[in-house]
Image 1 (tube, one colour):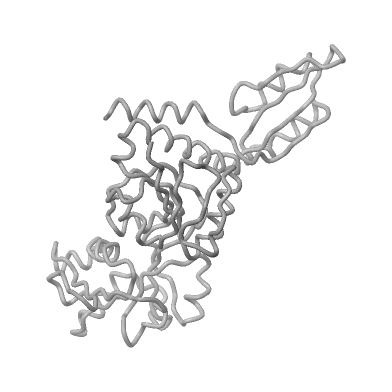
Image 2 (cartoon, rainbow, N blue to C red):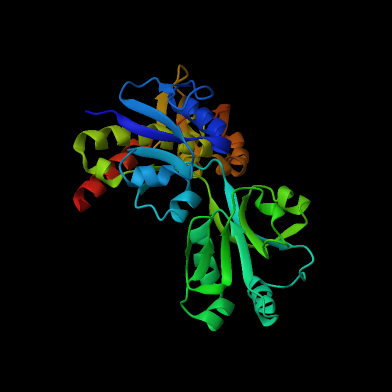
Length: 331
């Protein structure tokens, strides 16, 4: 089998990606010194690329797998299989306008005020396609212009037939563009602090995004590559599931066992083991982390010797098998 070509992101997602891989059992080496790091799996060939590029290269089959933000998958309109939301690198893609704009003014009202003054409405963003879709979804735009595409402006080309709504490609420092160079921005934020520091305020959220594992669809049709890809998915998904669950060991009297099992929403049927004292048994299970605080008072009353720890991974092997079989049936 050819090696699985796996692209991981440079930039803000790089450190979190390395840490995530470490929890999965994979070890990356050289990510700070080279764009071709090594991994402790001879069947995988790693490459570091910008997250903006990864959906395109995966879609084109130049990479079999990639990790990138859901925002860039949507922006590139990439025809890829999204295998797993990895749930790190969470951001919001928001619309921000100068603070001087009225507090209760919506995006549609702001646009309409600009057009009523005979001005063109200008947006600065890296997300050209998403911005175009967003503007066209606003009722005020639809009322004036119907299905006409906003004009997208880059240094190399222009497209779209509506110069009354112009979307300018931003190469960074997007927050600096209003009000002289744009009326609003569409940009990513984690906390909103940078936006506030530049005298802007958020008036809408276009989408939320997180790092995701994506795959080339043809690679998933290759029997050998498919097997390896699902092995990788199993380990990475295990990290996501492990972060949401806790492993519980508890000793309970046999007479209270059924009560405990009724109260304990196990991930699967718990493992029950005999103890040296025949009146007691050990119960070993995995539960949702969010349930534990509510369960603790009940467990405390009927159990003894509770041990809790956070697993590094929880491997949902049956779920992966069902997903794989489901894909095979549709191919």
